[in-house]
Length: 332
Image (cartoon, rainbow, N blue to C red):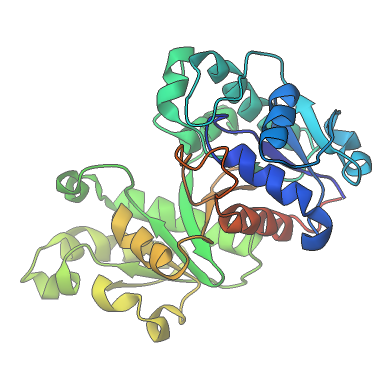
């Protein structure tokens, strides 16, 4: 089976620590073969710092499966990447960006079957001309279809709980103005398609949270539900999407309620992420829907204070690998 592609992420963060630690336990964990896109020399140094007896071997992605049993397969990217945990080095930014670009290209070319991304630090990348709001938007720009960038949809998942924030990194005061019928219908369309094609759910049932307390209570506590959300759901249903709501956000995530649905569309960042963080702080997975490739990522950042210590939890990254593997298990 083709390998998974892992992009190295921020060298000063915990991403390299985690996938190196997981590789060291690859037999115990029965990990699928993967190839890391990054700087081979740096990874060898970080493994040594962590006290891991790991051989690092530069390979072509197609050869990763044959190498995986004896050494960490690395699609080597030349550049300056010092091993200095917790201290981002601007000179490393070009390697971090190239790692993402080349990993995406590998999946697009059919050399690798899915992408698992280690966390990046956007501030460190701006010095190298990184011009995207975030990791996900950069991936969308790398995956145009017919010359048009796809709509990337961030889904947080843990086992059967899957949540999608309609709006993401914006101030709460701006959320009502950003919610539109078009965005809701388009997002529900992406969720419906990918839940069918990526997760094998024949007829996804998608719950939609209201924006206001008690989902507006018939207009007594806000009119966004009446004027925007309900009309959007009617349009989505006319397209064959099973969308239920708007439902009050304070009761929707009671287990007996959310288990009736295959995913939840929330209206803003915390409404979607608090449930996942509550039940799976160390094991949630970030899945990007809407892309022509499968991409997963751990649901955590660079955690500079833990980098190089070997103390970072591997749970979320392990879950991201497992989900990417499961989503592409039929890829030869």
